[in-house]
Image (tube, rainbow, N blue to C red; front, top):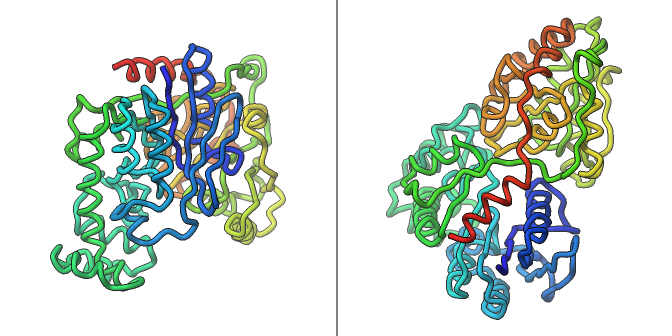
Length: 441
């Protein structure tokens, strides 16, 4: 089979969980004898690019670095995507597998894949689950786990609050009648966006329905996400569950608790992006309140390349007030991540969004490091609270501080007990096998 993996961004310009996932999947598919290509939009580029990454041909098609509001919302085709459509028609792949939707990779591209004669598979890696959640986190007003049901007034208000609008005003604009919201699309700037948000949500519902109708299979990463898609009208026959797994093929677990019991001070690690959505501020707040005599160390590790990341680190440093128990470390390559995680006694994933993983938590289980996470998304299905780790409510930094106090005070009855109950990690080999079944129909 000739298989195109279509993704919103790719190496070498971007390195994140989706890119690691797609690269690992490509590797396994090639090993099984398939012909694999990767395609991704290239914002701001002047022309098409073709190169190779890890032995796989990559095609990049140019789109604007500053798309219009209509392009971002899927109302008009994104300039430049017609080149991708022509490329698909020329390549005539057997399968086009899209990973999440971004500007430049949306419904128009699924239609083009169908026109090229391909079987179309979509895997959603984001909490939007396609076009169900405009906010992109599945956190109601950023404070609690949403029920996942897309409703115009509710979702419009939540999205506007996410943009900085006070809740009462956001709720009022969420109640704008659809006919008026539709007319407000003609208004320019932020006013038009605010008044038309109800219409944006209704457009999302229509796009979700068309996407489900167009694809041969819509793949979710958690059971919660699959049931949410069903609750929003997707037929189960079109859906599939394919949980995340390890991209690396060789991870060696560290010695178990009987051979190497956890000692004091306990080391708690965070490994990921420095951004608010990852809940890293909650970890800093929790660390700040821990008793001075508590035997614990906290390491925050991740890339600090952008202005936003530098600003985030400065905020974290201000929160911990130069506590010597809290340190900041640079990012590491994906290949080196397992060794870093193995050096932690426990990994903390305090996410404020409904994630499919995160993959770093799966890697932690593979090397023998328990996870403290939040009761949302994949973490809630990966970690059995009190059995192989602990779960706290998203944003519950006081609850997190209490858990950290418990593990530092008594690692033998917390961390070491969890280490004995860690589940086996799912692998990319299993993921690829499941996809090959979907590709074949």
